[in-house]
Length: 326
Image 1 (cartoon, helix red, strand yellow):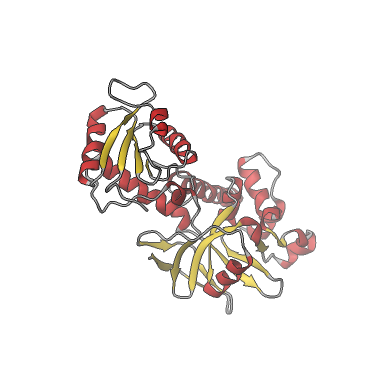
Image 2 (cartoon, rainbow, N blue to C red):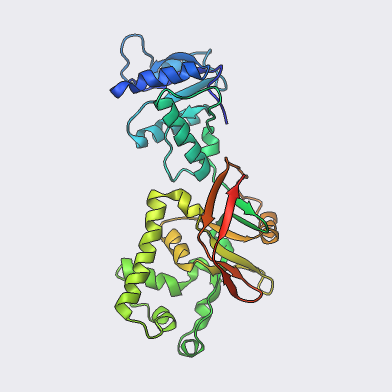
């Protein structure tokens, strides 16, 4: 995290619609920063180009910061990445939702808007670019549970199928397989969205006398709900972790609740998904994954984990778990 106090601050982009550039300058003053100039690709008189800034020995990486003044978020992300590649970490911008750390994206967006309204102060903190870029591992801890981002390839299925259905199908391809290979649920998704074949095994195992059209409409709505979370509310994705449990017999992590959302994440291109388990099980995973991302803890946030918690001992379901990020 960094503040603007004592730093040479450049505003990148000369746009002054609705006085936004003037508000950025006001925030720099209020936050104790040193306004160092305006950068633009086509600078007006008295403005700078980015090459002039890079060539200036006074613009030391650690002592300088940039406020990106572009209306288009895609441009902001492209310019921020370019600055980062040139060694700068202190960049105030509106990060894209898919960059990495959901919590630090939220912090940066709020801080950016404070700057935009001329309301930033010496206490306003901004995540550095690398803090935003790196995925959070720990999401939250509550009593004996912890939620975190887990590699997809560390997860296996534990789908319990109807014995009568198992006789008719090769259940071995549906039980205790890597989650990417769980044909059972992917058949359903592909049928609903990609014109795939009818998901016969899934339907025989789950329909159980219900109206088929209403059942499929319900499943499609469930997938669409998770698609919309990923698109519009990435924080809510963290608040809906998949429930997992360590299987001592098979020596792997099994999904106990959350197959549909897991399939949605995988089809959307996720390599890591939010999961929840007991702390001792997380420590087991943590110790066995040397390439995991570092922990990044954000500000306090209270939410409700909407995933139902599975009690493996007596197979009972509890309703919800209130969580607090510290």
